[in-house]
Amino acid sequence: MSSSEVTEAAGATAEVDTSAAGSVRVEHVTHRYGRGGEEFTAVGPVDLSVPAGEFLVLVGASGCGKSTLLRLIAGFERPTRGAVRVSGAEPRPGEAAGVVFQTPRLFPWRTVRGNIDLALRYAGVSRAQWPERRAELLARVGLEGTERRRVWEISGGQQQRVAIARALAAENPLLLLDEPFAALDALTRERLQEDVRRVTRRTGRTAVFVTHSADEAVFLGSRIVVLTKSPGTVALDLPIPLPRDDVDAEELRGSREFAELRAQVSHAVKAAAAA
Ligand code: ADP
Ligand code: MG
Image (cartoon, rainbow, N blue to C red; front, side, top):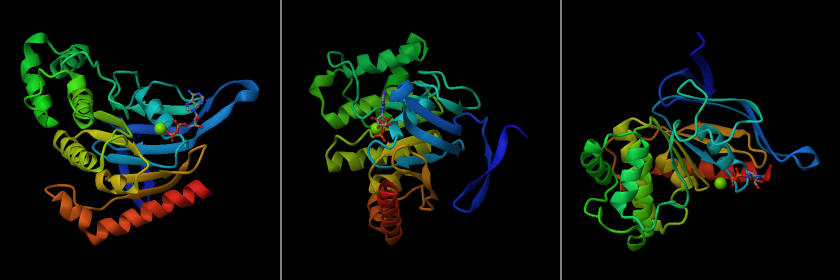
């Protein structure tokens, strides 16, 4: 049985199909930057299995290697040691996953439509299908009616929505998000968290989301992995047993279970950063 294995997550044993579309496997991965005397270990060793459909949140102090791990999963970098598999294969940059960064990285002089169309073209969608796909993507992220506006004319929150729509354009089963809401105001951040939660649920995508916020982690994650300080290794692997379908966001955020999990994660992050 090479395509499946047994992983231990917080005492629970689960069968993980590591060849399923959208699944991620990080196998004994260590990553170093630099050469010779200047070598620096940023991550590892890390072992992680993310089954298809999971919403995994990586939490840890600044500099612990979260972005490095995400870049390895995206295929932007190759691990110094060990192996990364996405949907059962070595990840190819631009193909393995849709990626959303902290800053939206859009073309500011283009319209919203222009930015989305570029993503559709890159994803190989035939031009005849663009209008329908574009409308569908913009509706998914709550941007109906903004097609003709230029990126510099819309708010930071809207720009990040365009970036999310763009990442969804390729219909990739895996979505990687690196602190995408860190630069936004609290209200916008909460709205976008709700949108991302809904979009990933509806589309069945696997997500790996990086944040340093325990609050954000508990709200979004079906599972949270806390990393130790540099070089990042797994300090805590915690399933989040909160309801995920048809929940009222305010009710969830105000619940006792939510507060308890947030306190637990927050404590673990501080302990891991100090260890
Ligand atoms: P995080 O996202 O958790 O803040 P990073 O993955 O960005 O952490 O960085 C982990 C460590 O690796 C940091 O000490 C950072 O300075 C270092 N680092 C990141 N990218 C590079 C790079 N391209 N070259 C050298 N060092 C790097
Ligand atoms: Mg980072």
